[in-house]
Image 1 (cartoon, rainbow, N blue to C red):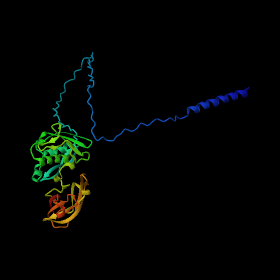
Image 2 (cartoon, rainbow, N blue to C red):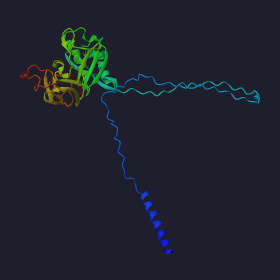
Image 3 (tube, helix red, strand yellow):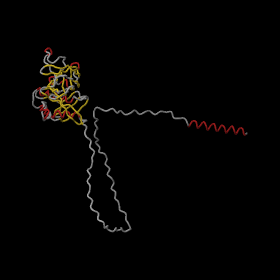
Image 4 (cartoon, rainbow, N blue to C red):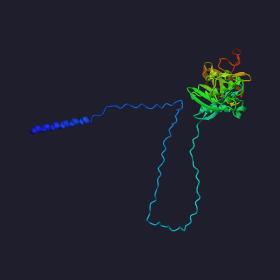
Length: 342
């Protein structure tokens, strides 16, 4: 009989152990991962629809505080016999932290004679497109005019609005833009705005509006503007396929020096020569820029071993011809007259 009790006890122990083992089994189910939020920046500013329902305003409840009633009469302190001199208040100017606006360098395009040339302005970011167009409408500074720069844009022209979507800038200007001037002046002022706006990588073309309305015919010359304009639509007479940015005409340079600018060249390649007294005395120096209707920047280093004095930088217009070669026809190179220092 005692043996049976022992066996029964052993059975209860084994059953309890089995139940404990079930409690120790880990949950092997997995939870689906939530995908990470897309943090890529949008190229256009999001538009937030204004709410038409004013948020509820909760007025704070008025609180009336009843002063406690004291049964103890107030204690009157004896007057002090020590006279304290009046304290002169100290005025401390509040220091308000100021954040300087971020400015960037942009190009604005004016004329020197019949050729477009580049000037530079500082405008506040992020509205660089608006800032650049505003600056080209303002025209050259007094110093720039003294150096030979001019603008075909009528001075009264103002920027009403500008927007950008899918590579197209809509530039809404005042109707003053089409006042006065002949056909070349009209094309020149359009070219200034187009080149200024399309310097940015995300602007390929410009659609013109005047006084809040799309333009179909521009000026008294009947220039058709029912489609946006790209740089390739600007007359080649204004650019020659190459624009020198630096050094500016009249600058003093010392060998070696760097020549920068932008161009749309035949097969993306052209050359630069140094002229003096009507003949080429150094070069060619390679110039690599854009091609096939695509304007791109170039940078060329020029090293000279010649006597100091006035020189002219001559950059071929990219038709594969050397300036002065009679077989090339009438050349249209970019030039910059500078002075070589010793």
